[in-house]
Length: 284
Image (cartoon, rainbow, N blue to C red; front, side, top):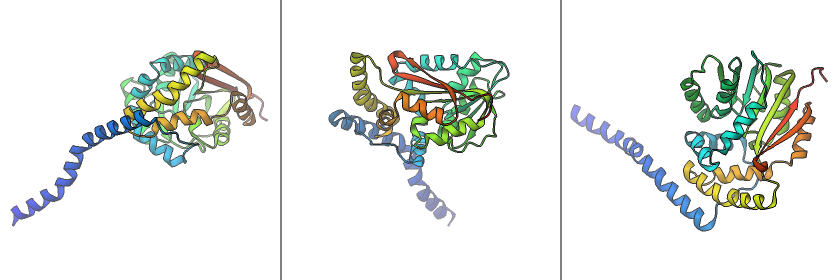
């Protein structure tokens, strides 16, 4: 009787075990199918921004390969962009940085290296990205200087006037309600604090612009989707750049949230841009 029961338990467990063993093969086959389909017909275009929960699920899905994808697709130029982004912060000893849409903590780690006497509070809505961030923070020995929280940038779980500076890198373009995010940035920032936002963009030089747009439309989504194991993630991320407002419009949105002294810094012919603003010392 015991032998029969053990056999039945084994049969019940077998499908789950087989599914787990087959999962890597299924992912590999899916990558191949998506790659060749997109290579033959071109990566599919996705019009407009996805719903908030769909974006959250997407980042949970691609979290494990996110850093690899960025390094490969940007040929490590993104590393230079992040270094410049952190340098422009000019943080003083004892400052508290709010790194929103913290992702895998690339900006957080670079900021801690450049400014050894600051603390960082990171917030992201993707648990998958935060898992990767926590591993990296621990590996770099920064656990005592960095706090990571799950949270929605539209309604931050942070008290008023908590941060000396707030950063968002490659994150705000994924959110429809940018005005709510910018108002939250204003709320959690101390008077005199600085806002810095970095997003990819398109070069202004005609020849460079044409080459980059071809890469952006055809090459990046093709290989990005393949590495991520999806048929949409990097098609979507490319689409978010197209629907992002112009430089002038976005700077106006930053001003409308209460920030002053807005400015723009273009990196690598304009392939990435840093948008800056400051919270007035005197409250409005």
